[in-house]
Length: 519
Ligand code: HEM
Image (cartoon, rainbow, N blue to C red; front, side, top):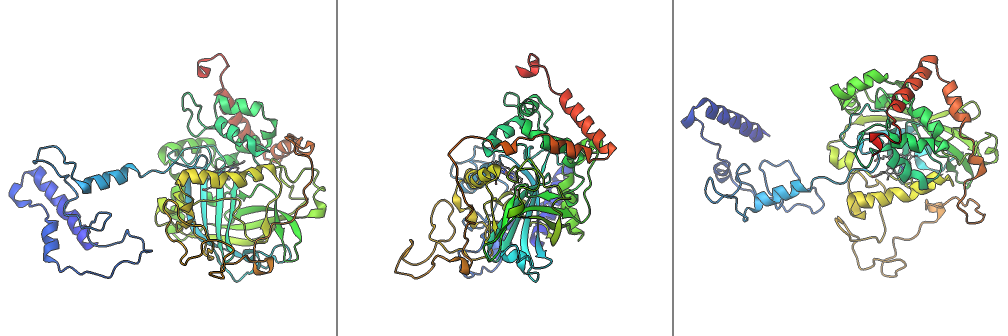
């Protein structure tokens, strides 16, 4: 570090000297000479599993060779062409040329933090998941908040839903709760997801508008998709311009199951409740912030944690015994519906605290990979047709994003629980199992073996399934307007006015079919 500061100061003085014309005085710093005068220590060979980007004193190539000059490429003469031979230059430039990975197809812009989750008291009556049953355990978590529609570089304060994805590194493996700050979704069936995303993203012929649903294709799709009406009310409300990631709700959206050690299942909706309360910006504030500080939410989260003002959220559950699933007058498999809280009250069961910023944005925030199918024993899915499709989509898209299934070995994605299996090789595989047996069953090594349910093996809840193979929507999914009205009517008058203004703004951007915008 000292050397670094010294080099930097010398560099600044040298440049000043050149600019001020004090020629002879400004001798360039000779890194090679200093290296020669220093006693070299061989050092022990590095453990193959240690990261190779260390905090050593000298710049090196990726092969660990010290670099004498990182400011001038190798040229044929001081003013001549650069030589092909310059492997230092080529290594550095090639690496730079490949720095980007594809951004997430949705939720590309995000900010994240580490922390922990602790349940207040055991929920063993409902779930056997260790993370929900042992109040003495602080389960490490990584939470990524995100903007759904916008690309990596758009402003934080655009009108949009926000992602609220939590990775719990439980002792029984990873559990991901991949939620949003809005409790319902646009569509009922996953097969419509590519359509709704195409419709709300920038239009294909112009790549406009960025980070906004105020355009033809979004409202065209909405006008033809009545099931989206409830979500549209939320998206046009102040919930879609949160003041801070610390001040917004999170929702699992779908109906999940909790399963106890007797195999009894209870339907559940997951909620996060910020201890600072839910606060929003008003539209004009959001607009100004987008220009003045496009990183408003990112900065707010980062600074709160640096200042030890740790964001906190309570996990709240709505629990519904299987026998009572018809009592709400809605289909609990329909992700465009909430469970009214007067019928199924929220129970606050534990607390999430975010107390550590990532050390490196790319390694952690960008490379984290969530998946609604990352579940631990005691937490299970339902037949919600949106959730069912999500169970396919996340691993599939991550294969595209990372280019290899081995992203699971990146530190941010590794479970804290042991990983024992015979999967191997592939691009960027970091470690493989040792020994001769890489298949199951085998008689060469006795382990690893299958774990029965009483040894914490994951057993899918044996939900009965019957029916004909059909491409149909259940009639119980048909009511698209009651809860949309319920939501609007539950708001205060200023909040309702904000929705009207948002709709006016958005719809004013929609043009006639024959206008230039459609060509
Ligand atoms: C069929 C419906 C859906 C599909 C196919 C889908 C698909 C995706 C895909 C492909 C990604 C990018 C993942 C990555 O590159 O790592 C993603 C991210 C995400 N999705 Fe969904 N999604 C769906 C619905 C939802 C719903 C209903 C929610 C909220 C409950 C949600 C919450 C999220 C969040 C929070 C992220 C960002 C995760 C992160 O921070 O890395 N998605 N989704």
